[in-house]
Length: 101
Image 1 (cartoon, helix red, strand yellow):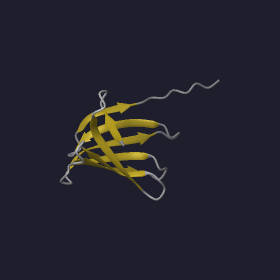
Image 2 (cartoon, one colour):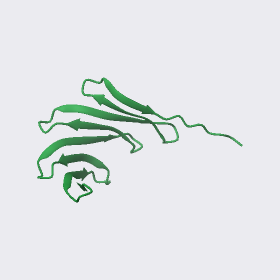
Image 3 (tube, one colour):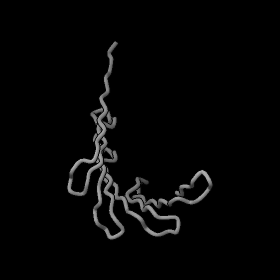
Image 4 (cartoon, one colour):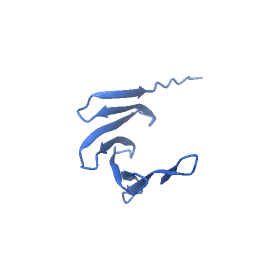
């Protein structure tokens, strides 16, 4: 995938790798000249929901990661970004309310 500015300049490129079932397992983010900028590795739970994205430098050093959790209905419950040492940068949490009639 390529991203362009409003003036049609190439900003960056994302290259995806998938497993046999078609789920994304790796993403390479590259500069316009093709130079590698970062690598993202994806993890899924048994329900095939994305639960974590690890973000690595070009030297394969973990920089940060994103974690997602889901409720019993399969809706995303939390989405957070963490530093490599586990300290939270930010976290979103959703609360769903169901009304019975």
